[in-house]
Structure formats: C-alpha cells, structure tokens
Image (tube, rainbow, N blue to C red; front, side, top):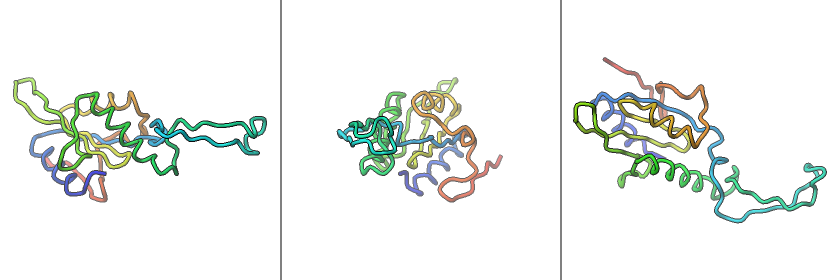
Length: 157
C-alpha cells in the first residue's frame, strides 16, 4: 500500500507538472488474481447435486492468507506490461518516463492503495483503459478523486 507521504508528494508533483489525475477502484480485486497454491475442498450440502465432489480453487478468494499478495503480484505484472516500473522508495508508486508532443519529457505516475488506484498523467485515461483491460473497475469510482487516504482533494487553477 502506498504511504501517505508518497501520495502527498505524488499529488504535489502532479500539480507542479500540470498532470491530470484520475482514480478508480478495482472491483472484486482479489478474485482477479490466480492462486499459486493448490487449494481444494470437498463440496458440502449447499452444493446440492455436487455434494462431496472435490472443488479446486483457482482464484485468490477473500480470506486466504495469500490473496492480498497474489492480487498485488497480478496488478504488478499488469503495470509492468504497460511500461511502468515500481519505485525503490515505495513499491506501490509506479512511474513511467513519457514524452510531450513538443519533445519535453516527464513522468506518468500510478499510486496503488490495495485496490484503489490513482493515475497522474497528461492523459490518464489511456492508462486507465489498459488497466481496465485486465481488471473490472467500479464505474462510479472512475473519476477525478475528491478524497484520497482521508484527505480532501481539489484542483486550484
């Protein structure tokens, strides 16, 4: 989970560099990640006709000790595929060098707090669409953030 200090600094850097900010919440986050362990159980009465059959768990279910790690690794692979690198100072701050149309360079950033993400870029929707390809996002959460980690956010021109 990204630290509060990293989030504050990231938002400051975004404001100073004129980057737009877009946030989203990943729906059923843990269920998007495959499990690494081999987990199975025998179906109980609630499975009716399939009672006593062996059920193999292939997704990181809520409640498993490794689910959070499996989701984080799955998200990390997705962010790496679209060219982002994890920061050494805070592993949940992701960055990618970018070029403006005039040749100037800048960095695009993604902050990850469990299943909440914030993208800071000139056009953050392009990266959000890439993330949405692998993860279902809660539609009502896809917007310019009003709060993040308990802090109120607003844009001042």
